[in-house]
Image 1 (cartoon, rainbow, N blue to C red):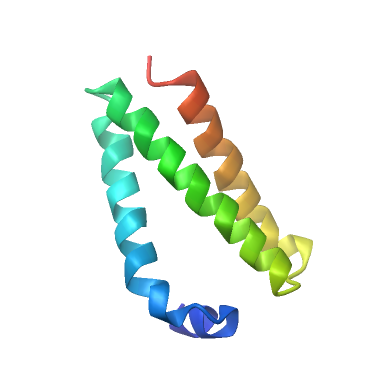
Image 2 (tube, one colour):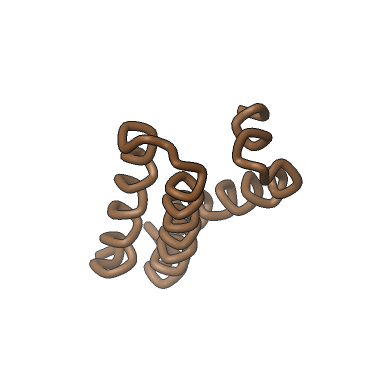
Length: 85
C-alpha cells in the first residue's frame, strides 16, 4: 500500500489519510447510537472518496481501479443522506 501512495505522488499525506479513515470508521460505528455523528462521518468519508476518485482520474488509472472508490463514495453519500435511522 505504501508504494501506491508513492505512485500517486501523495506519500506525505499517508498518515493523514489513514487517520481520517480510522476516524470515519469509528464515527460510522458511533452513528448507531448517535445518528448525527454517523452522518457527519459518512460525509467526511464520502469527501475522502471523492478526492480519491479525482486523484485516480488525474493519474490516469483505468475504470477498474477507480470503481472501488466510486462505490465507497456512493455508499457513504447514501449513508450521509439517508442517515442512521
